[in-house]
Length: 336
View 1 (cartoon, helix red, strand yellow):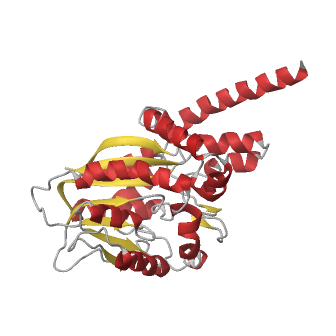
View 2: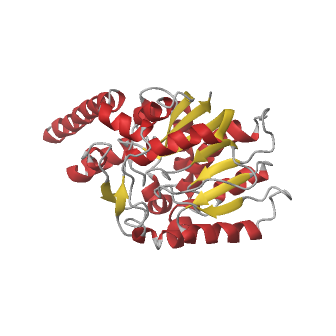
């Protein structure tokens, strides 16, 4: 009897938690000072580009084994590829058909190579030199990319106030994307500067697809509550969006400063430029395990179960409030 009461109490507590967290995510607040400094002011303080570079030194060595080559990692990436294909591979860019797509945070190049196989030319950037080296190596050994569509890989640190996103002789892009948390190492001020830069670099009608680690991951929170680890259950909400927290982005790596953002923050920051409108929002990893656990969960969970959870994701992730509850969220903008 006591066990039944305890179980019911846990269920009720979890339900109340989900409702409370949903309200907190949906009706998020952000100060007007932050809006002004991040979205509109070019003189806002920027992240120190060298201060957080060291923790990433070994990330390139474990990125594929801990995420890209795992069952969970593949399922999560396949979800985003559907959106990338719809945004770029099936679109006809009437203004500049030959303009490339800009990738921010390309990692080891999987997304750029996928789009290249769809005859989409990508300028893929990352600020980790090891990632660029591995991406170029993958590209050189890839035989599925059509001739003339090989991506260009370039080192680029968006935290550097003097960065230059240019590809001579092309200075504008047909679209842009950033997959799996590439923006979460940027401060709110950096995000604001990026929004302004993209408003000038993207042709009208072009799409910007961003996949960002969110402020609340339902799977992660319920797991840690079950383990009675309340500190980790609420780690993403411990601080406001303009204050980063120390966290690991992959197993066997050092902690780094990470900023967790809500869909509302990204929407407000980009639409404040008056050059973008939102056309899509959905969760990535709503019922699948979080990306940080890709390697361990891929070993412990049956592939059929993971495939089923991925199907559930595809059915539910686009509806409110579910797109607030994923490990990541996808938000797509159109350049006006």
